[in-house]
Image 1 (cartoon, rainbow, N blue to C red):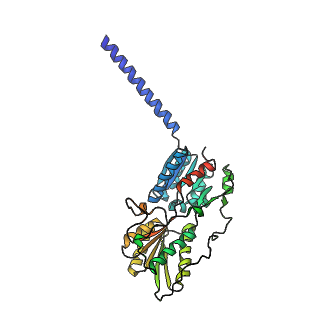
Image 2: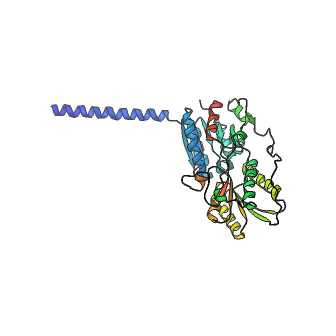
Image 3: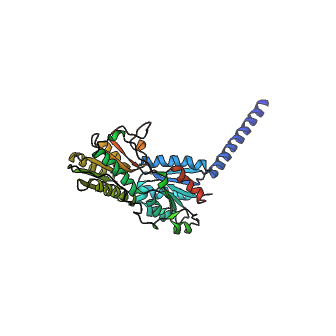
Length: 345
């Protein structure tokens, strides 16, 4: 009899424990609906890096987050629909695939009432409500100065520090009409995208002038046609032309968003033995770094070089034939835009 009672008691306890566990799991499932979805292409290492860091910064501000990654543009819509169903707002980093599909993203998010904070102005214009903006034209100018230093002054590119955005040049920008549709009030201190000329930063700063005879050939591999990347390439060409005059020739090619085409393009540059390669965007940089260890390579519109080039303990210098400029706006300030605009509260 005692044994039977013990068995019954043990059975009752087991049932209670199982029920409690089930209830706890059910409760946690309801509470873990993501406040902010982090959308990015899993094929872009720099995008993964950004969402991880932004997630940390959002956690400090009291937000819950969830990552929504997609392999390519083919499964973007299905992943995004899941993110929209589970999120109050979305963050998109400087992701090339998202940039190419900004209209699709907007067509899903805006009707659903989901606001987006974007990592750069071009994506924000296509589907976002606000961003922390940098001048990609000026980024190209800064890269051109590095190119001049390598080509004319003989600087060792392997020891050149990666150049990051000057914080004082950052501008908070917004899409007021889209924000209004989503019930978001844009506070003072934001500039409406499109109010200023895209080339407003094209100041006539004093640049060094080349007086030698050598004609330099520069191979430019740009991942895809996009306003931000286009501006970086244009700034590079304009500044380098001012410095080198008619002693520079550009072989400019666009990979139409295909990483394999980047490899084909840079291999052509290597076979022509160009004097320097400009790699615009991370896949172009990765292709160039794989193609040559001799020709100097400068990247631009690249977020984090250590991540892009798989360099452990990256200290700001690559130690190889690569340097360049980063388009990374401070991620803590990007995360703070959600709180400043009272999004997902």
